[in-house]
Image 1: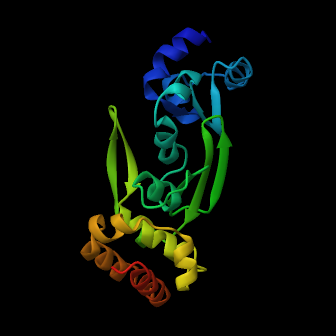
Image 2: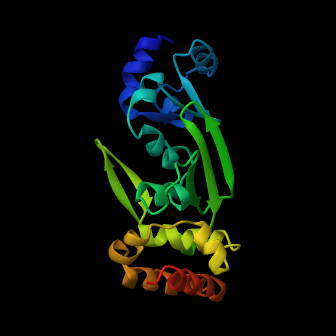
Length: 204
């Protein structure tokens, strides 16, 4: 297999898997992928998923990969909250929510962490444009609720303060009606209690 022909076929795809490769060329030998990865012509993202190293320099491509290498999923929790400026910390891993089992992958683009949620709770995200592609991102309100739901130790005013949520954003930009509507969809009393603590702590 000629690498240049392979690259011409898949470079614009961005992220691709072995199923796509074999649909293009049923006789493709997987040892080509092993060899090209060792030669640093490809980057292995997880079992069966690859990208080209040229994308390492492309802004936000690491975010785009999140929903490509483990789907269905959408970016949420700390990564989404940092993206919106709701929490001050730089996030060292890309956090997402999925209806699949909890998983984590590490590759040259970063560390990807996926938290499992029931399928009926996979809502409240939107597709953000990324060049000619899109990235599924939780809305700010859903990212907060996902966090409170998946991290139940945020159950006191002191713990809520440790989140250091941006008070200007919380009071001026957060869609409180959407927050309340999403909370109703969870139908979870423990989450409702933690949400009430957050509301009181940040004066919403």
